[in-house]
Image (cartoon, rainbow, N blue to C red; front, side):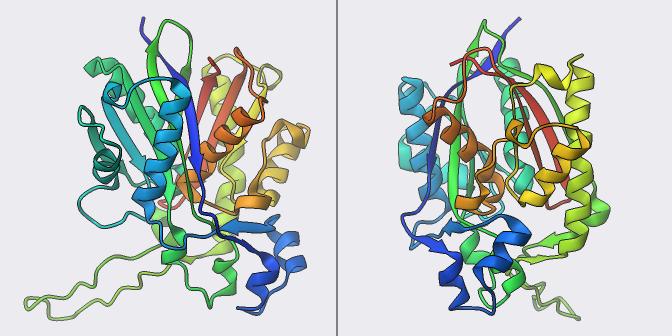
Length: 325
């Protein structure tokens, strides 16, 4: 039976690093308030790079790490909630930038869970369509969708991209995935689109293109689903939590991760956490964390890892990874 492994990883963040102290000069907040409630100390913010540019940089980094040719890429999946434009897809823009002329390219919109969804979709397509290599990217330019006068949201988010190369192999790699959504809570996190406005519309609907979030509702959702998703992966794969070397969660808030660790009766160092440096980069947070762990040589061949995400939609999910490089 064909397996799909992660064969290379990469990331990209803008050069501009914005600290909590710098934000306190823009809005009524301070470093202690942000750290105590979120764990965030800084974030990277675009000075002009859009989502496709960051995604392309991360993709090239991953292709280099995988030691394959750009022409070997059969599929590009970009997970993002901040595309350059409604159409064409960010993935098609990435394809053009890097010159991956042999690839099929499209986007996935599942917000902070997008990378988990992307892995699941890409793996399925690789097996059914005999694709040999794919790139899955989580990329966000959230700074263009933030209201920088709203202290409840502007302190939380950062920009960046992370990418993995997936390759067909005989070695165990991406295991079972669990993805779910709850559309009844769609209004918990929103970035609205175009106004509903044409000569044929009687009552126009004016939409807000800036991110809005019901923080308490999102927090309650996240704390329950992160534990549920991890337990589901363990159950479906007949594993115990002791079999898992690392859990790499979506980096939204350290209090969410602390809650999960206590509920699962795990030491916090079982979870990889880097939100203090990057903030919440939505779909990019998990692949950025994977790339950073790979750079630090924390991941060893044969390690079992659970990736777990949750976000707007509301969406959530998890994936078991057998580390193969």
